[in-house]
Length: 250
Image (cartoon, rainbow, N blue to C red; front, side, top):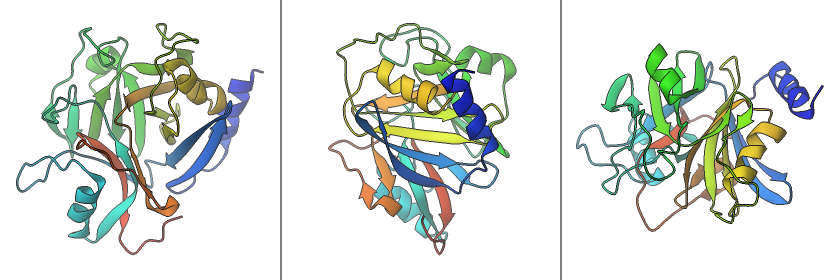
């Protein structure tokens, strides 16, 4: 049995913990790993204020929006690539309302480095699905964001990743288990290349499907870790796990 398979079986056998974040060190590089169970955790995607249509752009604005309903973020991170005006580059679905369409063609930049993919939150499960497979199956996503490239596809790294690439950035991404009951959100604490970042999902978390969310602008909001990353520029889509405002944060 390979190490990756053993890790995957162990992960699937273990009960899913409540939404939480923790530090992780792999090959001498630090990461922060957050986990959620879509069957019990409320995973949402945020882009704009529903009243004004103004892009939220920051974790603080999402928190202010949730506060009006007696809720808050357990954790959150930037949730997919966006244009300078913060419009999503690819598919964006909130509360089953499509705000931007799926893109299946190759193109410039990391987003167009096919295969890319979609992170789809359904009722009781969540999955990372390659974009053209997503177009064929048209799953009913409550929330969805498209980004690229895929980091891990059916257990294999993206074919264009180079182990010795000198393109290094702080990066973040998301991976899912085959049964859709485990979601891993990962952000590096230091600049890494694609190959090294993807290996964390495949070799150390045993994840068979993982999607790159972004680099350079990657940020994490994790109140339980007393962390909320700022930045010079506002964000586009934001992915977060929402809890009741009175719920303790682990």
